[in-house]
View 1 (cartoon, helix red, strand yellow):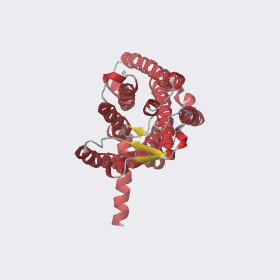
View 2 (view 1 turned 135 degrees about the horizontal axis):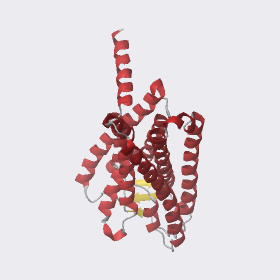
View 3 (view 1 turned 180 degrees about the vertical axis):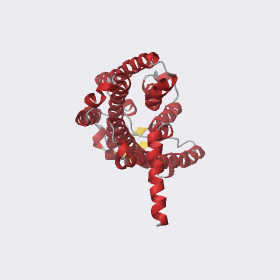
View 4 (view 1 turned 45 degrees about the vertical axis):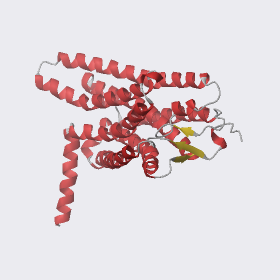
Length: 313
């Protein structure tokens, strides 16, 4: 029976690391631990930003949405990945399309949100007198809504296009979860149009926000350089350091995955990079912000202190 496209059959077989069962056992333990840390860290940021009045600022509004994106992304791939490491390495058609859509949507949305957060830091450092006007709560809410709608809509277009690519019965994916590039390799027709569309959308959603981030931090560095007191410089840099680390992590791993020539890395290396991008980075993000942020640590200790007092009572 000839299968014409992705939606014509029930599912896919994910090879993963099936030829290395010992590695799969080690990865199973590591991924479970990282996933629990991801849930704990990102949920803590969302709860703290909601409960502590001192964190009701644009910076923590954006940070809580970044945590929500990481939670959505990992929830779309990690439970299925954990199941596949210890059981049948299959995924249904609906599950594959769901992974594809959510991963594309969260990646696109995070690109734009990181640029919005960079703009917020630029205004805080370079235009402090106009901060309350430029970053008014209503404007911040509009920025957040626009960010989500852009990511979700662009992902919808790409997902619909990839589901129309004929696979001619090919349903074995040599990867750990469903991705655009992996599915395009299964196509039995010319995918030039899909690759061009993916390149143009990726260029817009990756390079434009990255350019805005670089411009913002160039202005920030210039402003910080003009500050005479070392204490003032330190405070200005502290407001940006955590965000800058997250930007390097996100864009560094994304570029390592998508901008290298196909022959530059082995398939196993691609799988490990995908695991780092999809599991390690969302785990590190909340800890980078909480460990390097006095307000966040203060809110955490405050909540913990109240809970201990309630237990004593």
